Length: 204
Image: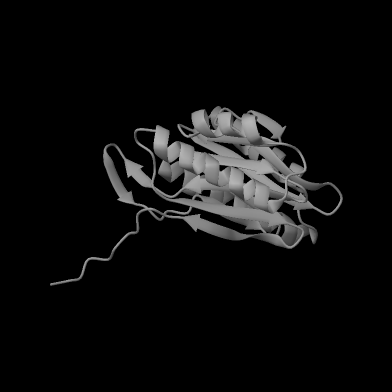
């Protein structure tokens, strides 16, 4: 039961996602990173069918890199979001991807931004957003506690509140989450929130 959410603060954007790889009633692994670093100042967090999610996010990542290689300048966050939306819209008429995306980035001119892109190619610029079953709880928590100009500490505290709410209220709540941040210093992993660790089984 996937949970992806994010928000924009004062000079940064944060995205968090569960790390469970699930099929039917089985959990295959609990350390699957669903937030891809798109380039130096962009993050793409995705939920949806596992194959579509991996294939589509890698496709977007490589095309963003190709644009920068050909033109010598990186795409802005808005341009990357519109390109992603265009690819989803094209695929929708042929072989649709079941992928929902939160795209976060930082640009020198415009600062941090967060874009909401769903599987039917709807694109919105938002201050906070969420996908998956966890969105029922994380959106309500963010509606209550989010305000513009949040510091990193305030934003992380809100993310932790969302994670705790999901864990305590959602019957099929994922145990582990990864948090990533993008700001003027670039896109990077911030922290993991783990309650279950994958343990390697010793061979006989």
